[in-house]
Image (cartoon, one colour):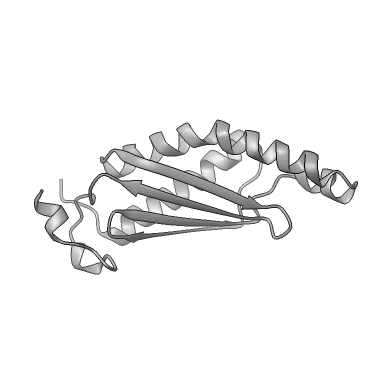
Length: 134
């Protein structure tokens, strides 16, 4: 089976993250954007805060909403890591997330041990093509 293009890999990760958020939090982000930069993967989610978090904020309980989000991010972290490792076929070295509950945006940065095999590695910005041969 031929390797996917980098765009196909990014789309699959974005779609699977959207589905994960729906399954675990009951809400799909309105948009998930995913881009590789060498062995780093940057993912942004729009409208990723939950109704409960927004309700807490509008009720004057922003600190509690932040605590809820920190716990949700901890719970989702291993699931996100497993999802990305499954799609890319490469182990992750680090995964960091942060959500701004005011804007409803989530940022995820993933550092992979090495680049995934793709048909068009030259399309990966800042790709160190030497990593592909290691």
